[in-house]
Image (tube, rainbow, N blue to C red; front, top):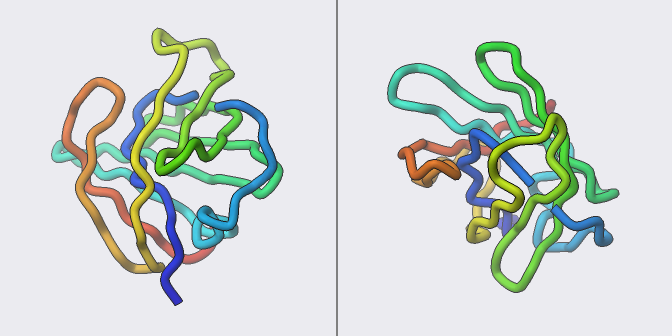
Length: 118
């Protein structure tokens, strides 16, 4: 079954606390990984309660709140505080094992992947 999930390529993040949306179902309980051409990566976790966490390949961690806004998923309330106050990206249909291209908040190209589990 294919459900909408996020096209997430973020190296920094952000979201408004709203209830989880059915569009995000395939992201719950799984991991979105953004792969950079230089080998760096960011792992993204979206929870049904609207919370978000990320860990970078260099060990840095972020937390935020996410919300679906139309055909986009947006992040706000980044901790620790970052330069960007808000980041939104288009939702895409993806199943576990699929990849799709994207860009991070700084415009850098990434390859996103939805992997099973946390």
